Image (cartoon, rainbow, N blue to C red; front, top):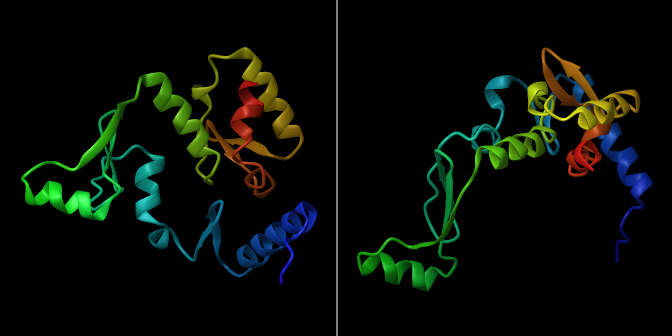
Length: 166
């Protein structure tokens, strides 16, 4: 039976893998993805990161348009029954406020090399102070008015928004 690696070994493995692939011409464009060139970046994921409208088809599929996200029924049987009965198999939806979209842009942005717009946090003086600390620690950098995670930042990407707003 394989034992899980320690957090320290996982981090070392992640950083070594990223460095190796980047030295061999790949871009580490998202936490768990690399591409040989920009045309090979996941278009599916990019739609989510940029709040581009998308339509999900099938059980459990999610869709997004304007500021509304909705999802289909999970059960294959119930999904098919609803379609056969001429009903739309939507299980739920949410309307996102501008603030929710802004916060989502930040939390998704720290998962990509594109990051998020600096203006998304400039309204909060405490976040600006925290950003400076995260820059000094090597987790984030500011490039062309965008806050961008470093490879080290990818290691803690899910926690970076918490550090900025805690």
